[in-house]
Image (cartoon, rainbow, N blue to C red; front, side):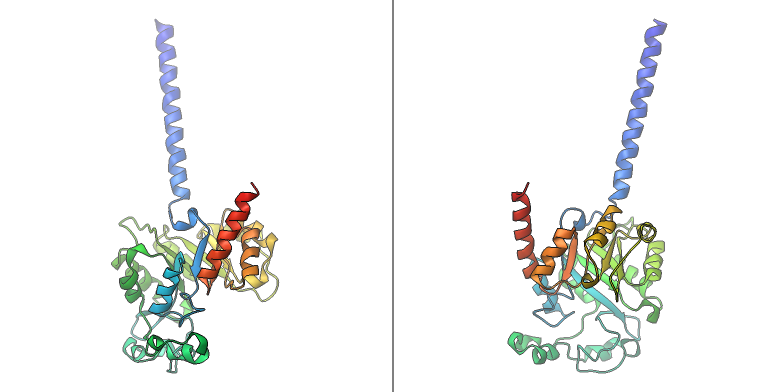
Length: 306
C-alpha cells in the first residue's frame, strides 16, 4: 500500500512538473510573439509613403491606393508642427512636397493646412497627373487613423526626433487615444521605426510591448556584427537598411538572430526578387502592386521546388 501511495505521489509530482514546464513554454512562446502583428505570418508589403509611385506621397489618396494595391502597411513618416501636432511628411521642410517654404517645426498646423500637397506631383509626373491631386492637404496622424481605422496596419517612423522634443510621448498618446494599443499596451496593427536608437529606446521604456524596427542608412557596403544584432534585439524586432548597400550575407546575419528584415526602398522587380531570395521578411516599395506580382511568382516557384 505504501509503495502504491509512493508511486502515486511520484506520478503526481511528475505531472505537476510537466504541467508547469508546459505552462512556462506557452508563456515563453507568448512572450516571444507578444507583438502578434501581421509580420509573423507572411512576407509584408509596405507601401512606402503610400503608393507613392502613383500618387503624391503622404497624402490620403496615396495611402488609399496603397490599400487598393494590397499593401500590408501604410507607412507614415512623422514630423511635428510648432504647436505640437504630428503630421505625415518625410522632410523637415515643407518645400519639396508642398507649395510652401520653411521648416515644419516653425509652422503651426493651421499654416501647414493651407498648403497644397498634391500639385507638385502632377507637375513632376504629367503622365500620372490627376485633377483630384490638386489642393490636397497634409494629413495629421489623427486624420489618417480616422480615415483608415483599426482595420489597417501602420508602419510609423519618428523622423528627426532630436528636432522635436516630446515626439515620442505625443505618438504614444495618439496611439492610445485611437485605441491602436489595448489596455495592456499591446498592438496588432502598428510597427514603429526610426534611425534614432535613442528614440526607439525611449518608446521601449515607455511601452516595452510595442514592436520596433531599427533603421540604418549605409553609405558604403553594409556590415553588421553579432554584438550589434544582440543589442538591437533587446529593444527591437527587426532592422531596416537601405537595400542598395546590403547583400545576402547581411540578410543571413540578421535572420540568424531571429530579427525581421525589411529593406527600403525596393522598386525594381529584379531587386524585389533578389530580396526575397536572400530571405527578406518584407520590404518598402513605392509600387506595392508590382511587389505583389513578384511575390506571387516567387511563392509559385518556391512551392514548385519543394
